Image (cartoon, rainbow, N blue to C red):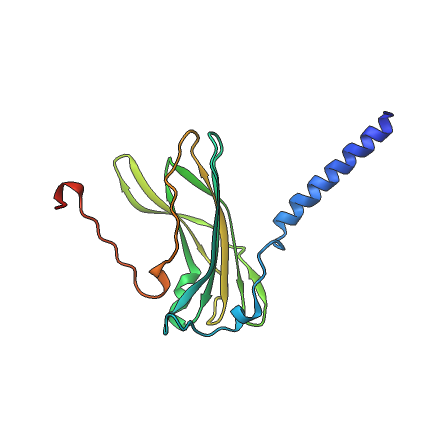
Length: 189
């Protein structure tokens, strides 16, 4: 094969790869929002709810090296109290996994999109000997009643670890305050 043809093929492959990477970074790859989701003002199953999760998707790839998880969340703000969900907190365990490629956006009722261009902050929630519970914090821009909040991130797991799979079928977070209690195994009946 002549050198010109090889160089041409390599240049074409480079252009295709570069275009694919630019398309993934451009923000045009968000899942579409249905018009009825933008117009909704309440949820019959949870009257008076401040916000509701419209869609949540978790894709996980388990490998010996380089396991990762992609998390995507879409939240609809229904009341003034629901605007507090614009402050997104993504939990993290130091030394177990890292959070990367965090991005988000706000979509108004009229379809106007405001991308998140702010800074993602690290916050220590709890720290004890040999254990740190951290969070990535971001504040979604210009959230109003009726807005949809979308964000996504990757969880990059530490190599050679397999983690317990958690399937969330229902979440009480947006319909009422979630309650958590813990009883140590030595105090259980």
